Amino acid sequence: MVTPRYGDRASDHFVASDGRSITLRMWRRWLACLEADDSGGIAEVWEVLAKVALDSGIPGWPEGDLTHKPDNGRTTIDRITNTLSDATVDGPVIQVGHVGSFHQNRHVAGDNVDLTGNTINGQVIGVQTVHHAPPTAHDWRPVREVGPIEFGVRPTRRVHLRDAPPYAERDRDRELAEWLAHTGLVLILAKPLAGTSHTAWNAVTQMDGHRLYAPEPGTDLRTLPADLKNERGKYVLWLDDITDHLGAGGLTHSLLGRLTALGVVVLATMDPDAHYARRTERVLAAAHTVELEREWSDREFARLLPFVQDGCVAEIYEHGDRAHVAAHFAFGHLLRDEWHRPGTRTAHPRGHLLVRAAVELAGCGVRTPVPESLLRRLCEGYAAEADGVAKESYEEAFAWATAEHFGIPGFSLLAPARGPGFWRAHGALVAGEWPVTDEVRERILRETQDEEDIDSDDLERSYCDVLRPRAESGDLAAMVRLGRLAPKFTEALTWYRRAADAGSVAAAAELGQLLSELDGSEAEAVKYLEAAARGGHHPSAAVLGRFLLDRARHWLGVAGAPEATALRSLLDPPEATVGAGTDGPPAEPAPFRIDYSPPVDYSPQAWYLPGGSLSEPPSRPRENTPGSAPG
Image (cartoon, rainbow, N blue to C red):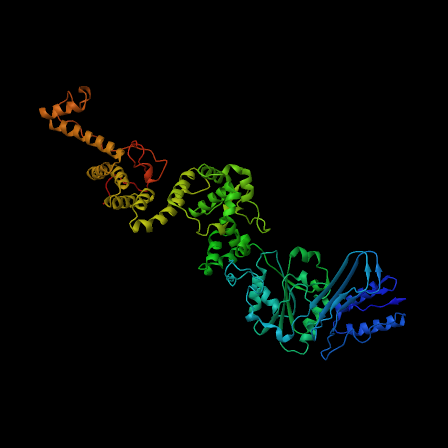
């Protein structure tokens, strides 16, 4: 004796009194195909199935309480049950109820999986799944009311979720708009994080008068034609990643045909590789495709320029990677969080220093990738001053710093560029947030003097641009630094004079040295050297003493009087007396010159402290160094 037990519409079990189960796989497969192809006639099929079941000797088929058809023609389920009773089962029992697209007229408290009165020697699993139908035509929203975040565009910041990036025109926008002017399926083929959602949103918002529906993955789409059949209007169906909307209950070739006949435009995205693998499927073969590259072209990148007032756009435009523009918008702030996270320094102390070296190079004006050897040299210099670095080897630090984040190749704290061995800090890390002190800039200048891949003159010019506003505001240290780095000799003299006249010992010492190189400026040189010497700068005192000694010898020899000769003899041994054994006054001493080599340390503090040698005051080759005092 076989006793039928009513489940839901997709129930495929009849339970016999002795516990046997009859599975109607053939019916299930046929009904699934029919449901996918025709959402309106499924109720009639169930009526036929009931008649077949009765004619086959299966009594008790639930004739009245399976379904009823309301005025709109949609099948409505009043009650969902899944029952096993009066049975003994040795083994697991799995009862699954699957309800497709439905509109329930009222809440039914009796929905249940009922196992009353059974003896079950095994695991019991009861599952009921409900897929809700899409909204009616009146629920579709005007395209102008749908924002980019709702469309799937990721926010550029964690806090203000409404902060979607501004839209810069892509090269394929015009082609996409032309296809969207017609009904049918339009597929945007692109790898993840190529900017497809933003491109699609921009295209849809240009479709005046259209209304949009963006279903969640797995939503049953089969009732859409019935919903829109008697509603005049222009509609766009947006399927973000169409692979989540194919198959049973999703978009099929026949459903696409009915939607197209109703004037619906279907816009979707798909991975190019997935599309290639499934390109022969009828629904995909009918699509118009537009390919969107992840790497931005020169024209596309240039279109960001009008939006640089936006901080996120500015950091991408100045420091970004064209291959990861959309990824930078979406995840740049998260990568920056990883860099600043306190736990990062604890877990990867040497790795943090390695990335810091790249960040500071960029902050000093290095716009090109740098060799790993320079990063390692800077990192090791930092490590000598830091604690806890020994627990992480350089190899471990480098592996961590170059590891990809968020599953995006090349999206790492240290980004690869320009071939093997060259790296740069990711643009999200160098957006002006990391402080670059004068000491850091001077260290970078020292370390990059011999690097062929880095233009040290550019670094100096960049540093001068930073120093000038500070010097103009009266910062004496900035004046001294600017005097040392100024590309022109006359500019250097100007800044040194301003600082020395304001009381800077370092500026007075440097200016005295520079003036000593100019014919006719000896008196002014003595003035500033004496000021530096009085301020405690011993090298200037030594230079001044030697200069005055040479001048004393000269003028005593010129005097020729017995008193002058006596004084002269006190300064030099007899054999070294200038003019001895000759007639007439001694020759004029050679012009005052002091030879010194360029400094190793560019900071004023490194050389103006008392006790330094004559070779310490720094001097850098300058453009158009004159041989006489400037006018």
